Amino acid sequence: MTSVLTRAPRLPRGVAFALQVSIMVFLLAGSSAPTPLYARYQAEWGFSPITVTVVFGVYALAVLAALLTVGSLSDHIGRRPVLLAALAVQAVTMLVFATATGVPALVVARIVQGLSTGAVVGALGAGVIDLHRVRGTIANAVGPMTGTAVGAIGSAVLVQYLPAPTRLVYLVIFAAFVVQIVGVLLMADPSTRRPGALASLRPRFGVPPAARRAFAAAVPGLVAVWALGGFYLSLGPALTRLVIGSSSTLVGGLAPLALAGAGALSVLVLHDTAPRRVMAIGVGALLAGVALTVLAMSWHSAVVFFAGTVLAGVGFGAGFQGGLRTVVPLARPHERAGMLSTLYVVCYLAMGVPAVLGGVLVVHAGLLPAAREYSIAVMVLGAAALAGLVLGRRRAVDAVPCIPAAEAAAA
Image (cartoon, rainbow, N blue to C red; front, side):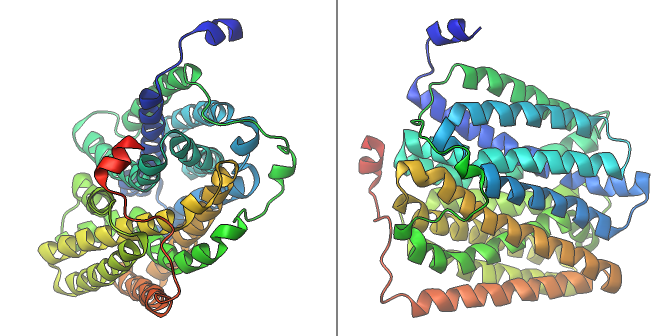
C-alpha cells in the first residue's frame, strides 16, 4: 500500500491547499453540529442547562489538553501523519455521536472530538501557511468561522426537515471525513521533518521570542471574541428561541450562523487592512454588537437581536483575524504549528470556561439574566482590549504590512 501511494501522483499545491481548508471547515462543522441538537437531547434525556454547557466545556478542555501536548507534533513528524490520524479519529467520533443514547456517550464523543481537533488544528493552520503565506493566514481566520456557520445551520436544517435528526448530520460529516482521508493520502507533505518529536510532547507554551510582544498585545482581544463565541455556541440557540418566541430548531441555529457568517465575511473584506487596525475594528464592532444584543433581550426584538449578532460577528471575525495576522507571521516555518497551538489554547480557554460559568448562571438566575451578565462581562473584556490597543499604538508595529491584492496573488 505504501509503495503504491509513493508512486501515485501527488495533488497540486492549489488542490492540497483547498483540501486542508476543507478539513478545517468540516472539523469546526463537526464541533458545532451538536449545537442545534442540544434542545432535542435535553427534551429526550431530561438534563439541565448546565449539562449543555458542561458538554460544550469538556470539548474545549479536551482541545486544550491536545494543544498543550501534541499541538506542535507536526513541526517534527510532518503534517500528513497528524492529519490522517486526526481525521480517522474524527470519523469514528461521528459514529459515536450518531449512536449516542444518553449524556455519557455525548460527553465521551465530545472529549474524543476535542482531543483530535486539538491535535490537528495547529498542523492544519501551519500546513496552509506552508503552501501560501498570505492566503494561508486568511484561511486560518475564515476557515473556523465558515465551519462553525456551516455546522450550525446545516445541522439545524437536517434536524428540522429530514428524518433521523440525531444521526443524519453526523453521518454526512463522517462521509466527508472519509473522502478527506483519501485526499490526504494523495497529498505531499508541505513540511520538513525535524528531530525532537518526543520532547515536543512536553506541555508548554510555544511562543517564539520574536512574537511574544505581539502575542501579549493580541491576547485581550482574542479572549473577548472567543468568550462571545462560546456563549453563542452553547446557549445561543436557547436564547434565540426565547427572544423570538419560537421553538423551531432552525430558528435556534440562526444566531450561531449569523455570528460565524458575519465573522467569515469580515475576514474576507478586511484581509488587506493593517492587522492592528483590523483588531481595533473588531473590538469596536464587538462592543457595539453586544450592546445591541443586550437591548434586544429587554425589548424581545428579533430585528435588534440579529442586528446585534451580525455586528458582534463582524467583531468576532475581525478580532480573530487581527490577532492571527499580528502574531503568526512572526513565527518561522518550524515554529508555526506550536505558535498556532498556543494561540488556540488561549482561544479555547476563553471559549470553554466562560460558557460553563454561563451555564451555572442560567441554572441559578435564568436564561435572560444570565445572558445579560455574560454579555456585560464580554463588553468589559472588549473595553480592556480596546484600551490596550489605544495605549500601545505609538510603540506597536504591524507584523504584516498591508499587502496589495496583486502582490498577494503573486506570492
